[in-house]
Length: 250
Image 1 (cartoon, rainbow, N blue to C red):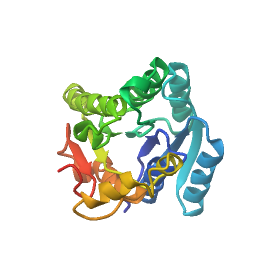
Image 2 (cartoon, one colour; image 1 turned 90 degrees about the vertical axis):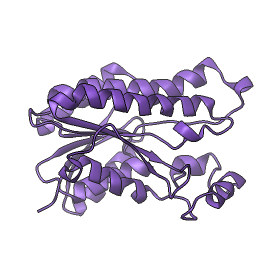
Image 3 (cartoon, rainbow, N blue to C red; image 1 turned 45 degrees about the vertical axis):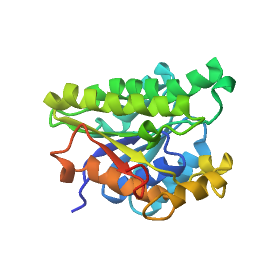
Image 4 (cartoon, rainbow, N blue to C red; image 1 turned 180 degrees about the vertical axis):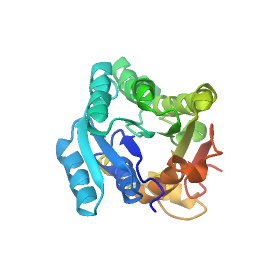
């Protein structure tokens, strides 16, 4: 029997990259998946189509996690479709690297509103849909939370906050049988990393050179341990931040 049979999972920012891979892997283990997207309906519909063709269950629901009204709508539609939430994957995130002199108020809010506020809003509005038996929340953080690379002060700050939020929520929600953990990826080949010119750059080469397993990560490398944390296999794990980085940052 699939380890996530009869479970409902919401994955934010799941129209591409890591989120899309997580959605597909959750569905492959039997979960009914809500593929959330902020702007790329086409990408989300493609993920849903791939899941359904593989024999899984999924729907796409739009909404920016940085806007509370859209988050409320996301979970209202989730309730209408599936009636509950057992698994929440807070994956939606944005990133940028720039010298501190070039950081604007808009840059700051763009990253913090999605990467931090978005996690609070999604968690807040998902909670009423969790059953009494509990469930699992997995926050997708980053190794930058501790590596704190140059030119990444805002992005690193958001992920440092997310690691701390993860531990606090684990203590708060434990009595409700809801486990809260974080996955901290290293550099991963995604559309976002490629569009910023990171993949193939000197930055990627330097990262690979300091990564014990000697390569850049792939979305599936992040999806597999996320599925583990979402499942009963991880029933005694909460409040953890797990580096999934090929050894980078250890």
